[in-house]
Image: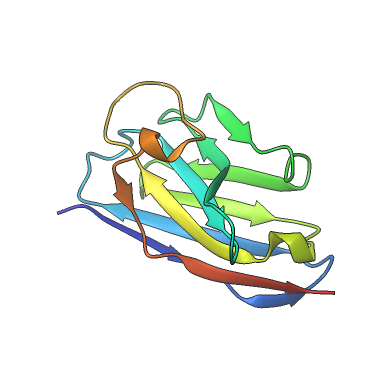
Length: 126
């Protein structure tokens, strides 16, 4: 059984940093792309960052590019999202998603992933 668990969400002030963690169990270690998505109240879920199984491919949404860093520990099957210079518009529930396919790429779209976590809340106050 595949499980995806996000942790690290919190309430912070504008300009502060936060690190999100995503652990995946039940898949072959290192298989498949991992991605971060977020959904703000009243908005559709959007892809914010992803990383390929080997870490050679990364994607960042324009809204977070230059502020955030994505990294992956293939041995522990953990994905990290270092969120710097947080803004109130970053307030959302953040979801981690995993793909089982062993291709060296990653998708910014929900259809690219099979397994999803339940989300962790990030709130940024001005």
